[in-house]
Amino acid sequence: MQKLYIDGKWTDASSGETFDSLNPADGTTIDTVHAGDAEDVDRAVAAARGAYYDWTTSNVTERAELLRRYLYRLREEKKDLAELVTREVGKTLSESEAEIEDALNLTDYLVGEGKRYFGYVAPSAQKNRIAYTQRCAYGVAALLTPWNFPVSIIVWKAAPALLCGNTIVMKPSSNSPLTAGALVSMGEDIFPPGVINLVTGSGRTIGDRIIAHESVDVISFTGSTGIGKKIRSATALKEVGLELGGKNPALIMPSADIEKAVKDTIIGAFGVAGQRCTSTSRVIVHEEIFEEFKSLLCEDAAALKLGNGMDPETGMGPLISEEQVKIVDGYVKEAIEDGARLLCGGEAPDGMGGYYYAPTILDHIRTDMRIAQEEVFGPVLCLFSCSSFEEGIGIANDVPYGLTAAVYTADLAEAFRGTNELASGIVVVNNPPGSVEAHLPFGGVKESGIGRQGGIEGINEFSRTKTVYIDY
Ligand code: NAD
Image 1 (cartoon, rainbow, N blue to C red):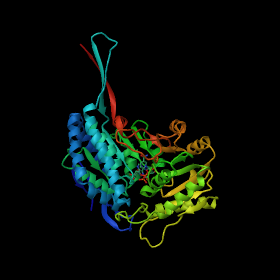
Image 2: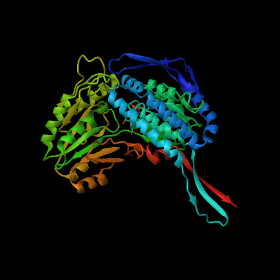
Image 3: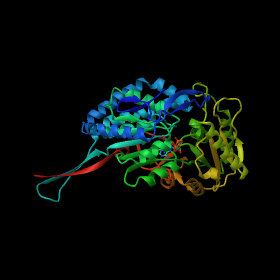
Image 4: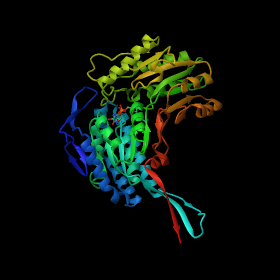
């Protein structure tokens, strides 16, 4: 049974309530977890506030050294942690390992950045005065995180928050509390009590209290756009970072390497069973190569082997829950009723035991259909055809989201026009839309969010500038 972690101790939830963490590959319970509530949030925030002074007045390079120790620990534990991630959220072992690698890369980058936590010196308008800026922490940071990258998203928030001198209260998804618990355990003997706190339980109960709490100074949320909007509107005077949903397009032009574009689309659309904010969910293919692209794509999609992520032969794991299977199936059925054509998949295969849904591709889709506009969060790909680059860009941009986008072309002008004209926070040329590198900013435009994680921008999310004047 996993408890809450508050002020350096594993502690019971005040309510005495618990919930189960399930394995989506077979529906079995992995472990039971304490369900915190508003009272536990108050305890966790008080602990974080209590630890704040000593933590934030420690030297940034000391904090970077603690992160280095954590980095080594995470590296040692990588194999066991990857297995836990696969059991808890269903992704394949290689996908779990890849996300832990992202977490290691970010931590490694930040350890070095500790020595470059710079402000700048400015000339003063006054005589006998020095003026400069320094970076400082916000205070208590609340980290609200989703289940689909249960290691990397926590680390991409926690590591910069801690480096900058914030103390943290973590609220992971109820679909991945054990992975969050394992991450906290690894830091138990590294970080002082109160610096890291973990409250598991209902998103609404805990989230509402965190959002309203006067001692929470910064909220960093990654999750669905609906909840992100609610947080934004309820937190006028708090610093808020929001990493939200996506409806990511790949535009494939006639000069592209078609076989590579097909392979990339399979990974982009069906990696983590399509449950990534960066999933390729729309492919817009020039009409000259549409038929060839479509038949190669459907062939490869049909060959993907569904199964338990622990099996090295598995190409695609289960969805996170039975409810998500129903949501995805609902989108597909509605699209078909509206005139879309099913090219492959479109069903939950019988007799597999867990929450599986076949890789699904549809065409004959109008851009005003719900499936063309909303984030499905499952292995469903919408295929469009276009007669020109301009038309393709128009379809790509015709959604409320703007997280990532790709253009496949060997034409230099189309490549650069794509980077300029695709309305998204990240544009990739000749690779799937979901590229992530630790030293570069990651984040979206429009309803995909506000703010950036990774790189210097990720440090700036958790620190503010103080201006200092010294007269002499
Ligand atoms: P979710 O929005 O359901 O939950 C995210 C977190 O918010 C969880 O910890 C949840 O418990 C909590 N929460 C729930 N209700 C809340 C409330 N009322 N107030 C505050 N917090 C609340 O998302 P999910 O299903 O865990 O993850 C999938 C979503 O996350 C998708 O939309 C996906 O695109 C998005 N996502 C975005 C990024 C990105 O970087 N842009 C990365 C990964 C996932």
